[in-house]
Image (cartoon, rainbow, N blue to C red):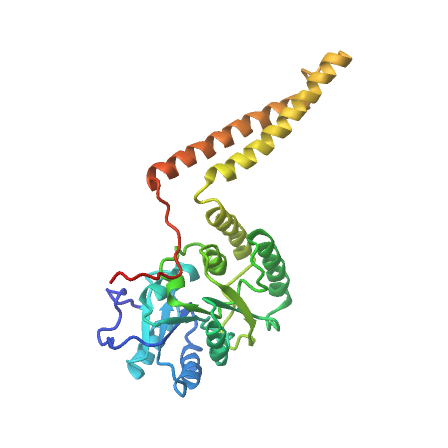
Length: 332
């Protein structure tokens, strides 16, 4: 499949008009058969409503006819459809990042392009935003996926809730609604798209969820395997670090270092008591090597934490950047 020489601005006849109220962002990877039906379902919901809208499709390096279908769809709906083609498959996080950067709407809806997310839920998501929330995540309470996908997903969500402290049932649901300011500056890469609610919550945005309909896949095959949970867990550790310790690395490394050093110290203290009071030899005991190793690791981790604190202070100066929800001022 031939690719245009310039993919960043794929359509010369893109219409620049007044900003729509809603931008729907739909990443697509080998979803040629579902795209037109998805757009028709979105339009059927939003055209009769009071919301003006646009639909942004991001072709994540598809190898089927996805791009040709998007070209045809945009030609038929030039004022409401925009599409972007990545040069190769970079993943959902990259596709969403493109969509977030290009969206013009005050509100942003994300959904997968495989027709498993239900566009008819958009009014419900918008109604929940209208209650004062900044991000509303879908919860696939009745999930129409094979058992081998549901069980790992439940385990993954439980671990994510425990580590993040954010009580959502379904972090993986692609159907979400945002106020635009929530996603404008989010750094998305790897598998971080799953953790947007956690990143937003850490910045002080109000996050909630509502149950949404979920359909069985009509076309194609799932693009995800068990490997995504392995990658997702590693990114969960990244999210935990950047949401809790990005401004205080000494607490992260120092805390782990103190724990290891403390265990090492107690181990060596025990061996010292054995040597002094019972006269037993300890030179050949594996516990001695274990205690020394923990003490060394503890000192190293504490040192790394202190160096991190110095770097943060040097680069950040004395004034840190904090998210501000609203400003009241008489200044112009």
